[in-house]
Length: 516
Image 1 (cartoon, rainbow, N blue to C red):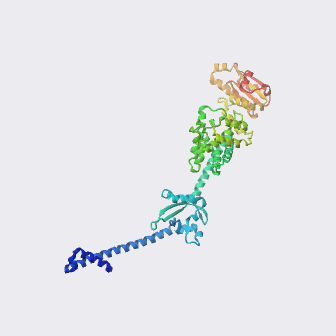
Image 2 (spheres, one colour):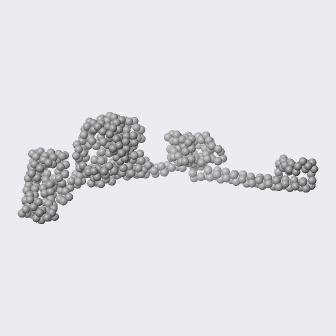
């Protein structure tokens, strides 16, 4: 039996005697003494039970501490115990493996000494503002093997007020995997850009030049290196949305109609949707999304005004406009650098931000523009794809619109002879035999012309329904005897040949002088 302290028993006895009153204090009766002793025995038993319970709790607490110590030290998660001064009081086995060399000769160490310089501020904000209650912190720590990325979480240490347990999850592999995913995504994006380049060679050179111009403007504006690099990336990718624009619109050499232009205008929003799916491209996506906005609110896609348009988008808009104006387009001759800058100034405070434009003009006026930059086809494959849009649907020769292009671009001067093959009285043939037979006749004429002329890089056009224009470099390359199989009492085939230098053809209307 647990021996009870005499003072405690004496105090208990005094409480019992006091309850009996003053008489009891002067005279003890046998029954009263028995009662006193019984109550003392009960009280002693209660004390012994309480002592046993306390001892049991002490043992459980000790076991819990030992178990906690074991879990702390042997856990597969790195743990560090920090006091209220952020000094390391205890570090478990796996955490010590990351920093073994640093703790070789030190008992305690400030945790801040393990943080890479770029993460110190964010760590203190996380602790001081108690942001750890809501979110973890990803930070670089100085491990023995080098700088390593960790994800930190905090739990209060219940045995010491103001202390807490820091858990460290090594996310270096996760980070590298995320970076690899970004690199893979970049490769996909650049592959898409390459596809656009192969579809539209103009876009390729244009995107690179816009990127260079935009970065130079941003650098001159003293934007951070990170922003300058981001603007360059946006320049490279700013037309990526055109990947979903049909070839019939994207590669159309002539002026777009309203419906086609409406589809083209969607490319900035489509580019945003493609890029914003990856967190690291969201800012670039935002720049691209708004690079066709105007400061007067008349741009697209959202009609933003000056204060709502990101500064990077405003820079990109100027670079984009400048390169467009200084590049030879199909129906528009390139402007000189001076002319383009004059046009930029004319759009001040309507299309372009005035303050940015001042700096942009300072930068762009020093650029040497390659006068040979053109949207016109260069290779034979590009020419074939380009001329597809000028294909006559019936005969699959070139149509009159392509002849108009050849004249406007002075390509006609590369040929010596302008030949006109006319089908006289062809309307009478249609009346007698019908349109189907008339179409068959035209296709037969086209087939004969192609067999005779295409291998010599001559150009053949169907014009005004029943006439054909053939550009050749040699005279008498067309023998009308080849058309004898088409002899008919109604249609009379006539051929007229002219020297190109004698015709002075500058527009499509000029060929009407030949009586076609």
